[in-house]
Amino acid sequence: MYSTHTGCQPQGQVTSVILHRDLPGFPDDNTLQLSYIFPDGIQTEKHPHPGQPYAGLRLCAYLPDNREGRKVCKLLDKAFEKQLLFTVATNDNGEDVVTTASIPLKTQPDGGSRVDGYPDSDYLKTVRMLLKNKGIE
Image (cartoon, rainbow, N blue to C red; front, side, top):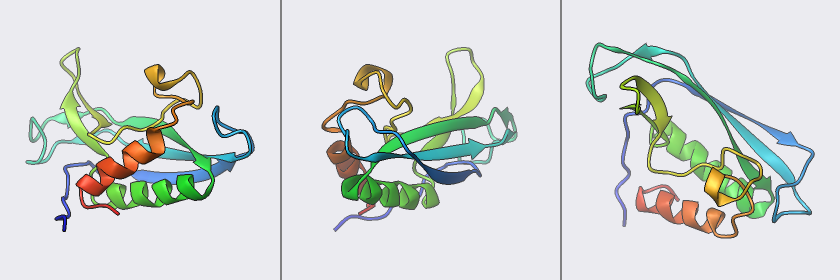
C-alpha cells in the first residue's frame, strides 16, 4: 500500500494530441505529444523563495500511441493533477524557474536517452515504477 503524495507544482495546464509519426523503437505506432504550459508566477510557501517571481515553462513530452503508452499517459495525467510532475527550482544562473520534478519525461522524439529522447526500451517500464513509488497506479 502506497500513500499518495501531493507535490508543489505551480498552476499550469496539459493538453495532448496525436502526431501521425512514429518514435524510434515504436515503428508501428503514432506518437502522443503532451504539451505542458506554465505561465510565469509568484512562488508560494511550497517553493524555495515564497513571494518571489518564477519563470514559466512550455514543454512537450512524447509517448508511443499504443496500449502501454496510453496507460503511461493516464498515469502522467494523474501525477500532473497531484502536482508531482513539475516544481519550482533555482537554475544554474540563479533564476527560479518551473522545471521537471523526479519523474523523467521524454522531451525529444528521437536522439536517444542521452537527450531525453527515443529509442529507450526501458522508459515506459521505468516511469511506471517511479509513478507507482509515488502512489500513482
